[in-house]
Amino acid sequence: MNTVVIGVIGADVHAVGNKIIEHVLNEQGFNVVNIGVLSSQEDFINAAIETDAQAILVSSLYGHGEIDCKYMREKCIEAGLTKIKLYVGGNIVVGKQDFKEVEQRFKKMGFNRVYPPGTNIERAIKDIKGDLNV
Amino acid sequence: MSVHLLVDFGSTYTKLTAVDLQLEAIIGTSKAMTTVKTNVLEGFDLALDKLKQANPEMAEISAISACSSAAGGLKMAAIGLVEELTVEAAKRACLGAGALVNHVFAHHLSKRETKELQKANIDIILLAGGTDGGNKECIIHNAQKLKEAKLNVPIIVAGNKDAQDEIAEIFEGSDTEFYIVDNVMPKLKKLDVKAAKDVIRQIFITKIIEAKGIKKAEEKTGSIIMPTPEAVLVAAELLSKGFEDEPGLGELMVVDIGGATTDVHTIGEGFPKRSEVVLKGLQEPFAKRTVEGDLGMRYSANALLSLVSQYEFKQYYSYDNDIEIAAQKRHDNVDYLPDTEEEKAFDQALARICCDYSMSRHVGHVEVIYTPLGSMYYQTGKDLTDLKYVIGTGGVLINDPEAKKILGEVNQKSNKKLELRPQAPTVLIDRKYILASMGLLGQKHPQMAIRLMKKHLE
Image 1: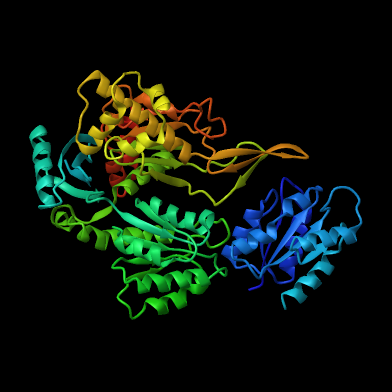
Image 2 (image 1 turned 90 degrees about the vertical axis):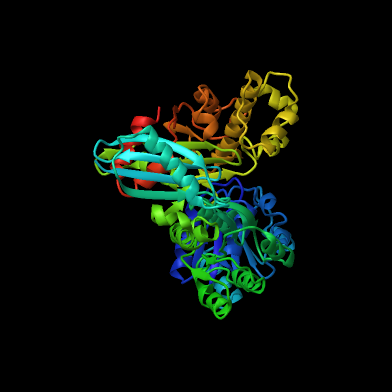
């Protein structure tokens, strides 16, 4: 089963995009485990362990994503999720910054794919399917 | 006139309650020491003689139902994957079935942990792990380790459905008695403990009763149908929900302070009461039971004392006696009854601490988070602030005229504002000690059991 965990990280309550992602991934045949808004890194990781997920898709729209995502890769490794793919997208940093730099910073933090504001969901799905060999 | 006799083979006492089915009345109660070591029927016969002597006009007994917590009750081990998820789900299934859960393991079982299981005095193991379609590697590993450990204990497998066939293959051909049932957490955070609870009860009735030397009782009482704590939970649920045209009392809580443990049962959804509260964690069971093995009046008196500082204890106890000696005396002599004012006050202090601490651990908690939209709250566990009734039971409460005051400890406390305790519940005391009996009676006569509880809880 192609299981992915999705949710909105940190003290962020933006639920609309989260629902759209769930809907589209479901339509594309994924088993979607949606942990919803206001989720901590531990919530994502625990959900991924129990459901044997192949990827975690982190959304953040309120600008604090960089702080919320710090050390997530390290925590995954600590929890035994050594092969999990990490995706992040939304307004993930404060203010208007050069996205190339932002992308580099998040990749350094261990995220496999980083998406700028306004990314088309279809583009991300193409990446996910490629990465997970679906 | 026909009489239904309800029997509770307790760890210390065998307790009888006789109910007149036509008059819908409790004829009388009696108790005698439980005699597991010799012949469990000796205690039963003695209690029955006492009951008959006290009520000479009592008619022929037409039916008997029994429950038991004798010989240590039902002891279980719970194994799962993630502590907050399938481990917690497995634990809740055990507790809901009336078991004590002293051994809990997460992730892959190690040699050290299987050794602990070999040495442990347990009756059943519940093995969970993974949602349906989720992780199966861990539960298969653990099944293999349990088989290799050659434990002479039945194992209930209630984990990832996808792993069931492989686990069956592991256990088939070995001496391990195993049962495969529905997953306790089929989807993330969704709790489904019914199938696991049913098979626990089945094993309890068919095997555990025999292993504990209580089987002999069934010659006179018919089958012992459930562990006593489950009977209390069943009674609480019945009283809360009502049955057909007999209305229930609504959301309620039962606090049972015993010698070794304090049990808290709540019946109610406990959903958040305000819109800015977000529910976190595993789904809560509608009928929830928690057991505190370090909170008790006698056997656990020392453990209780190690939880609180001297200063804190003095908030409950105003005499100058040596606290540690008083606790030790209770630990060493579980039948001890207080005879002086000081000793009575000491028991009350213990009871209030049991009540306060067990409440902190049972109720839900909120945690404040600051978001760009203002303060929001995470709620973990049940919100019991609107709970209507709190019912006290267990020796110390039912015999203490101050019982209602002791149970006042459940209320919202000024220094524990983030705990979702009942705010202004009506307190009732199970003076006649009938809750477990009514759980048994309720299996056949639910409406009568509800009416008798309404009448006798004061």
